[in-house]
Image (cartoon, rainbow, N blue to C red; front, side, top):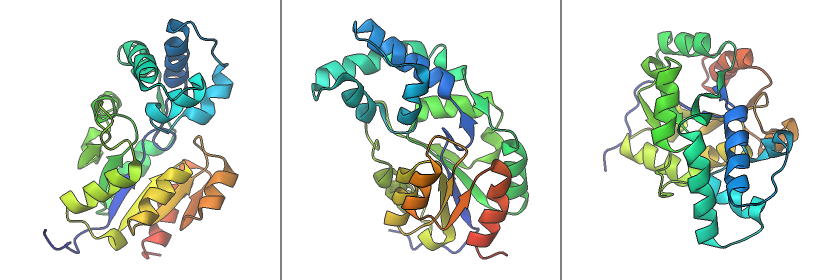
Amino acid sequence: MKNPARGPLTLFFDLDGTLSDPSEGITRSVQHGLQCLGRPYPEKSELQQYIGPPLRWTFPRLLGTDDSDLVETAIDYYRQRYETIGLFENVVYPGIPELLEQLRRDGYRLYVVTSKPKVYADRIIRHFDMDGFFTEVYGPELDGRFDEKRELVEFILRERALDPQRTIMIGDRARDVESGRTNGTRTIGVTYGFGSAEEIAAAAPDGICPRPADVYPAVLHVSGRR
């Protein structure tokens, strides 16, 4: 294995709830999956809490089952709608393009590290013309490989020979913070996404950002540049 190079500081950005608000597309597609199974489905507001974790975590809880075949069927129905419609029912948070441009100008190396399958994350990043900011987009495979974000972060650090102490994981859920800390990175939690302020505070990241505008100064502080 290569020794981690010092190189530029690296930022891992979560996608949903950190770069963009995908709530309309995800909640409607979850409802569609449940409806196709003949199951009642919660209102969109009740489904907000399920944005972020992998579908193989979400559907067992919504269906109240450990039946993997039923869960996979629900995921198939979800994807039928999501990959054609729901993918683009999505809005980039105000200030995010400007944030990414500033970080790029400052010499940070940026990656998307998301629990959304890579095939979808790639399309969203290109759709919103953000692909020029990122070195690479990482996410799970459709078969569930890397559904566990800690494993995904570990894989990227190893594959890219990145120094964890010169890497910051930025996300809106406790699992983002935990996936970074477990692998030795610095962490920033944002509370404008889908994780509550209480959830993020309990995860104890190195920095907390209530607004997208707070991310840049938090990065400077956590990286020791200010």
